[in-house]
Amino acid sequence: MQTSSNKPTVLVTGGAGYIGSHAVLALRDAGYAVVVVDNLITGFRFAIPDDVAFVEGDIADQPLVEKALRDHHVAAIMHFAGSIIVPESVEDPLKYYRNNTANSRSLIESAVRCGVRHFIFSSTAATYGIPETSPVDEDCPQRPINPYGMSKLMTEHMLHDIAFAHPMNYCALRYFNVAGADPQARTGQSTAGATHLIKVAVEAALGKRGHVGVFGTDFDTPDGTGVRDYIHVSDLASAHVLALEALIANPSENHLLNCGYGRGFSVLEVLDAVDRVTNLTIERKLEGRRAGDPPSLISDNRAIMARFPWHPRYADLDAIVNHALAWERKLSEIRGS
Image (cartoon, helix red, strand yellow):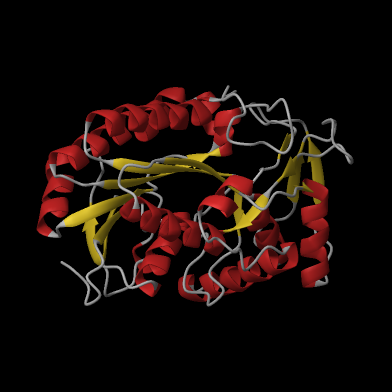
């Protein structure tokens, strides 16, 4: 299946999930044909547009994946499927090495068998562990401190080796903290019980939660709470499209790039922003640190800015909160709650 502009068809794994559904929209908006594979365990069918081909199933099901790759003549894969909760990875590491590492290996093998030439991987800043310097650049040592980060780093290594041995190039994008929602409220973070701070905070602002937990107030940061680099999910999705175009343009090049804005906000600063946007005061419950949480993660994003024509459109904390809030209200309408 090709579009009228002859752009290649892209398979998006986890395309019914939070980041994957935004990538689907960005690809469609850019004129690409899209096929989604998602098992709908954490994703939502309503997040996939009606005109996008959808295959319900697991990426570890190689016959199902390879049928989708061949039936749709897929030339590129964007891989978002996986588990993402850091504390859960500490409690259940085997789940993460299955969902994020073993299943990625199965997907990559299917891609090689079917002649897929381009692979874009949803990696994470958690591969850096507790960085020695801040901001964190791509050459910073990767020493994950939790199974989530390690499971992603193992997939980065697999892609490096496979790209050397087979005619495939890849881009691994190391996300910092993804937040917000589609500015047109077409999709957003929909998972019940999600742990993303801004998602939790807007739920509290709308009365869906009684308070927001602040996990750790004794970090070596200006106000004692964890500092993170929050990137709008739509800016992240646009980076994926640009990564795809770069891989197509230069089939011999691979990319390992940070995705962030190069500035950080503490937990308390984020909650202040939600209070400001909503004109409410969210109850804050101070709690102990969670296992596996570094005190600060801020990106050095100079490499992606130099490599791709990436110009973030929503690098504003209040805009991120506003879009998350608008989606949360729409989600209540969808669910009738």
